[in-house]
Length: 410
Ligand code: PMT
Image 1 (cartoon, rainbow, N blue to C red):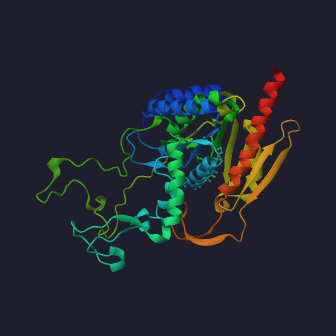
Image 2 (cartoon, protein in one colour):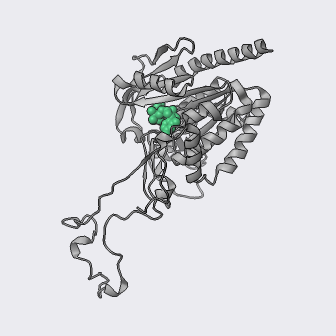
Image 3 (tube, protein in one colour):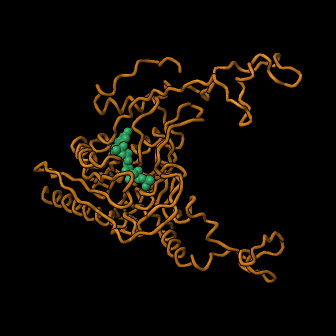
């Protein structure tokens, strides 16, 4: 890695405003930011006029590139299930939704028919043409180009697909869903800041639902190498050293990796030690500066150790003074979550567990991202169907008290 271009200040010693200005100065904005800004402005303005509530749902993992021309990156497990599922329930509850998601993670509605668990092709069939019966019913591969029937949804999936399709079409026809992608942690942070500022005119009608799994560590742009990090110290092959067979005679044979036929792989591989900086926690700036006055901010806390979940969630509330932390454990996140809140007057914490009934269990194939596949127990009831109505109630209370405050203030 090259020497740092300048000495980075320790983020510990910076105020949240200084950390923001430093971060956005040294890490360039994504090229799509302006286009997303325009799309979001139009979307938000429309819903400000209609008086509808609007939620920004963040979803999926963020990548941490190791090279500017990125070949390798650090990533995390999140498939975007929480975000995509929640977005659907928010729409059902009457919210307009900006869905800021990691590119290629799960999307609202299409999630029912995508990824390895539910390949969309399995839902379809070729209907019979004048001279054939359905190809899957005959088990034959019908490649006759002039002899084809219409593509149809298989009868056992008609009801489910009709329901999802209607919901999707309703959201689309009424401009209720705006889908914006990001990839890296820096792209995510630029987009989050830009959207939060645009949401200012929504006031208390705005809700932030931060379900994305945001990286805590990254490589700042001024310490990032441009080209692919090499895995060995061998000098590049020079043409003049090649013998008649095209083999480079200057490289010892055991240094050339030729695939799995090698009895022993080369022993000269380099260790890769990655030196990551902390990503400043921008929740502070979101609450104190970027988000509209009176809006509701809900963050998630993910832990793997049950003994830490509550204390870390309480700590986050204390530190960032937002409204709610939804705590979840990696292994049980589809079964239970805990709402952690804090009474502003007394400072006391309140806990409310939301659980899917244990009886609602079925075997379903596991998702690729979380587990590498396999069969897992999954609840039949989506926990988001319980989370979102509960959140809507809390948001309604905030909106009411904001209205009372304005009324009494007059
Ligand atoms: O997508 P799924 O597979 O369904 O998984 C869902 C989920 C487990 C990812 C989701 O439910 C969840 O818990 N998301 C938040 C995970 C997370 O980032 O937790 P954290 O403890 O690292 O961060 C807590 C909060 O700080 C987050 O709301 C995040 O927005 C914020 N944060 C995090 C890092 C960072 N650098 N700056 C931040 O502001």
